[in-house]
Image 1: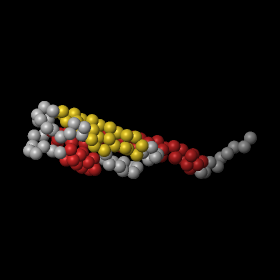
Image 2: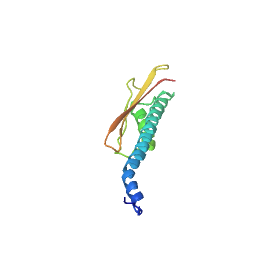
Image 3: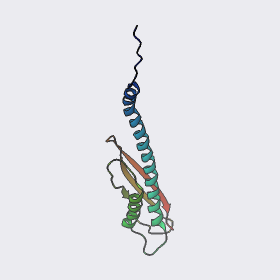
Image 4: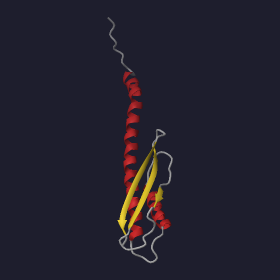
Length: 130
């Protein structure tokens, strides 16, 4: 029976085997955290655009102005490890024409994971014109 007393380097080999699994788990957690954060940012950008569009002012904010508010908010707050894309904003109801009319703002954003996968995040906000 042979007794192995010299175990030098065994822990380094074990660490080298487990390190890729730990790194994949760590970056997966961080990447999903950023996905959830960007979902919140897209929701807030939609809300900011709708709020800017419903506020009483003369002249009323145009669809391009609402899109600019959404794009500005998203540009300042979105975070990703993958390639960055701009959100797509649509205002199907157009700008506010009359008091009490609904203003709907839809924002769509393609989140790119590190693993070359893309998920589309959507947000919709509807507010009454003031």
